[in-house]
Length: 131
Image 1 (cartoon, one colour):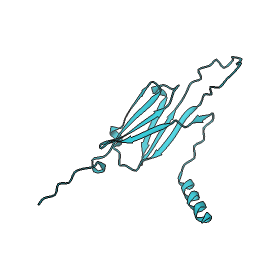
Image 2: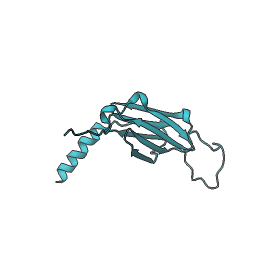
Image 3: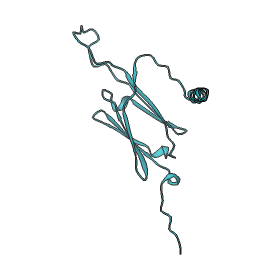
Image 4: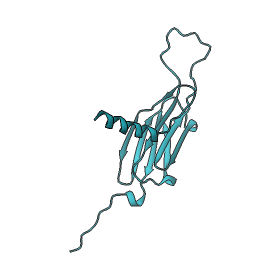
């Protein structure tokens, strides 16, 4: 049984691309919920700016990357320092068919909101029964 688990993990790890960047990166906390016509993604990304956020969608993979500028003076001598600066990075493999050209994004008060419209074929529909 352990060999099967190891084999499954190995094949899953092989399909994921590894990213290498210098500096520290954080994984933003995300909520995703579904409506009939779209998926809504909310990502907590405080400290960045809308023009510093890169969003990509290709072959069902959604990628979010955002740069965060340091807010402290780099020459300051700290008595206590708990805040760390780093960029945000997260990817998602979406199972729904998404209309890539209609994806919208807005960034307000540290929260990124993505609206990912489903393609017409992926939307639920009511089928009437003739009798």
